Length: 309
Image (cartoon, rainbow, N blue to C red; front, side, top):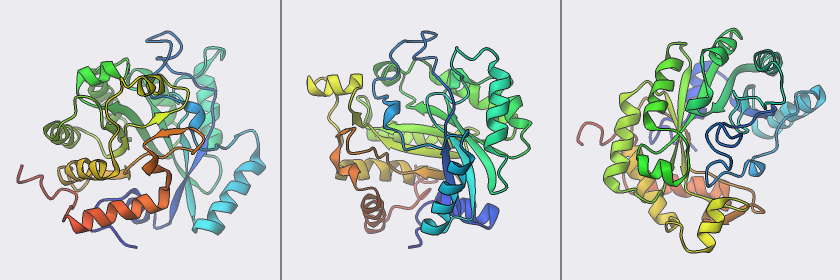
């Protein structure tokens, strides 16, 4: 169904840009994170469970890549692909790798070497990206997207989730990345302790005012084997948003986002074996339909409140 009149969806954006139906292929590298290896922290963000990520492609197995592409072409009508690195901070190799620059160059080059790959997307943190990694990505001569974790512009909530970086570090990283001409996608979370309707609008204005091209929106989600799970079980976590309340807050954000900001994701999902709360996000396809139904019924259009707020 065509929902392009409601929001600026990534699939529609890719279709217009490449003239093809594009899918991401999740690829794997030997990465860690400054918030895990002791540089910033040792335990990561309170919600982090990297083992709950979707299955990824092993770049050492060329047949694995071909089979996965074949599956996506036959099942979903995919015509081309973007190599996507999302585990940990995907510009930040494990310390057991002696020459991290050579490792990244070889890894990224192999990821984009297939003729059906039209670009690369790398998910990382503001404090895990520098000119070194950006120069390597620039040398690939392909479309590059940097997905950068922001989560919130409320410093208290950044501390609560033990994020380990500031809003200024995020804006500094955006400034650096934008100089390379790469697309920048901000990751944000709705449902943090100090969130209000007004703060959601301020977050949208922050996204609008910078050099950010896209946004990935997640609800605060409790996964097994995280510190948030412990807080949740002890009743020390904020109330996890109900489906209706999440839709309402999401609608506020969408209405206040400029129309040219590309929406990469409207909610997060997780394997049932790892998901504790909210359980309403377990039905991935059905949930998307419900979100768009809510948008239609409540007159929510991306950017509709940008000029009136």
